[in-house]
Image (cartoon, rainbow, N blue to C red; front, side):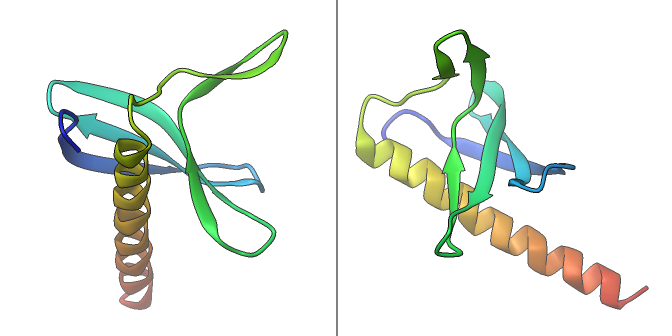
Length: 95
């Protein structure tokens, strides 16, 4: 990523059956909340950007100039989410 340096990512559980978690991403200089981690029918996780519901459907609040940057952000969120799940599992096993 050329300009968007990710500092950290925090995950928030949701009550939704469709959304596995919400990711709040701290970029250098700003925080962007509301990335969603979902699972498709092939059981593969993917990320959607923050969005809102308009009369014409869902509208993205965040979009990168290049597809490569978006893929980097998605990859980093999913990578950190996997680590988060492992840590969460380890914490539960020690209780």
